[in-house]
Image (cartoon, rainbow, N blue to C red):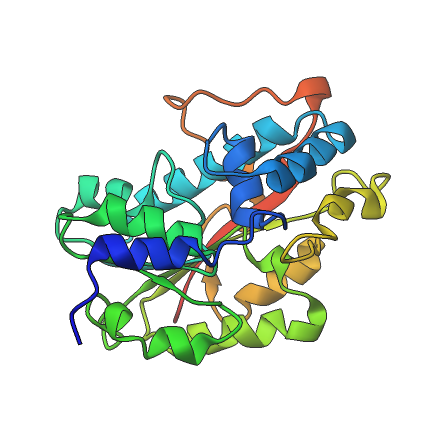
Length: 277
């Protein structure tokens, strides 16, 4: 049997993309101004904008938090290995770009369950060295932790930065998000870090269930969580200053343009970084 070329593999992967059902990665891409989205994704995104006119700015603020936190992990915490779970469609300020600016030897494994991420990720990472991208669902940690392409990049006997940015609010309570996170936490040694961000309604309780409605017909419903609920993901690990705060408040960079959210609004997301004792 002949080997399947990268082009043929990409074509096979694209055939599995359901363009009629919104996907969180593509909704996020649209809100960031990307082009890798479809009508169903744009419709869901525009519903979000009607509910919260500052959602685009909030999404960009969320992304800026990820950039700052990865830079901290690479520069100050000395992390050289990154497992980016639920990475989304590649956009500006990708984890490997930020980490490898600090340390060219940094290694990054990307994981997402949307086939379109796999296609774009593999095209983007061609020739970049110590990076990989796989299609997998974080609800199945063992599949990821034992995947050959992950193991080719990540040595789990050495400290790893586990990244769960803007993804856990797409895992329902019935799917045991805390158990999922604990499995990844248990798989890495002392000195590893957890970078996590999560949508919340703490800053806008009046919105209630309206915020999650655009995701009701998507591949994954949205489940906002409170500060206490987000804090639970970090249990047993030591939080890095300033702890779990609104993403715009996590080590803001004076040199980085700050998003102005209309009406003095909030980014509606918590972010934090912690280290394993």
